[in-house]
Image 1 (cartoon, rainbow, N blue to C red):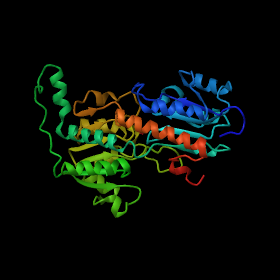
Image 2: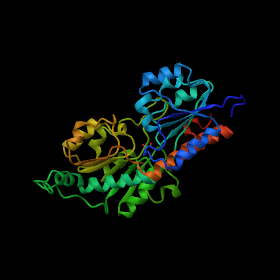
Image 3: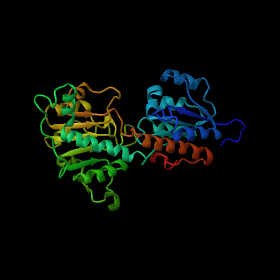
Image 4: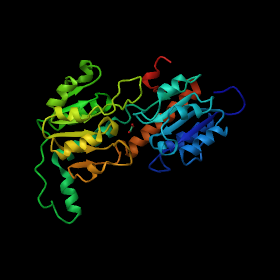
Length: 350
Ligand SMILES: O=CC(=O)O
């Protein structure tokens, strides 16, 4: 904590408890931070106003900021411009989510002193892998076509949807075997699927837990279902995973493959996916994330073989609360002891 008499400020970018439940313990935990600092919420409703608020000096003395995924609607991406507009006093940025592609960590590290960034790993794993499994089953069975026809008063539709496929005995290729990928593996095995994976590095035996490590190309060419569980890395300092699945990768897949994405929309080239669905190369897809949320490619909306969920991977009361509590704990530990609970790996040596 600062030694001066004024309390440091703590910024809230977005909202605590997106489910708007005042009984959620995260509200109490957030309010309890008031003992360590003055809690400040910007009034900006868009990026220009937010930049103006930063320039007005209103946030001077802020040491830490908590941000949500959906705060991007107001501030836009936390890119170099936003990072450099934030007050010099700001030392910590606690992102409430596992994927932190909205934050330019390099720009945060380059500041003097740097802004230390944290995310929320593990707390998201179960809920996201549950949605992942729902999408795998939904896409394999082609449930969306029947469900859509039913709501139009046409029962299963005319003609009826093509027969779906059982998960039992199918090869699930997991691209990105982090916490969510490994959680998905366990769930998929309960449905009788055989799991192979590709990752930047092969996992040790304990973490792999029997899943076979294969090359990227082998995963593409031998999987019946391909699940994207890797982070979106679009900055110039990490392997770029933007459009890691595009036209050339679809061409290498089995005919009639199922593709599922709960990671970030931009790891797939959406236009190439639409073409692969239209040609029948891809039998069906299950998507929780999109390239330009909340915009959805019209080719996905019109295709009832695609099961669409509006980014609800962690949208449960229990998981949202756990994530919020985790992110708040990052701020509490930083203010009380100068250390984040879960700094992002890129800043490990900082
Ligand atoms: O999308 C959700 C997350 O990154 O936690």
